[in-house]
Image (cartoon, rainbow, N blue to C red; front, side, top):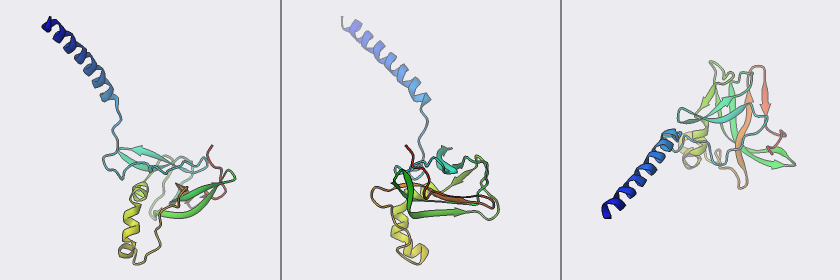
Length: 163
């Protein structure tokens, strides 16, 4: 009687293990670094030229337009009358020797947002001044707020708030 019970329990466990092993193989691995994630406060603005995506274990901004951009900034936004109101800039990235064309990724900006506490605490040492880098206000979200290039400029202020 004991051996029959043990065999059926063992068989059941093997079935469960086989089923969960198959599920585990299909999981998409998360970011290796806790800074390499899409920020929890992130909001995709419908008209923004860049969207947040995970690529190769890193959170990046991807140009989803046909325009090329040489600068992009992320900042704090709030909704007012179904439109975006920019309440502050967090970080800006610029390139001088190229541009982000369609489907090209901007690396580093989202990890900086995730590491905002470090920049706030060390801005005197890094920038030589304090009060320049500030966290977003309560009830604010983080989004792409501007993007620009030689022929096209986009600003989030007044754009549509996502539904």
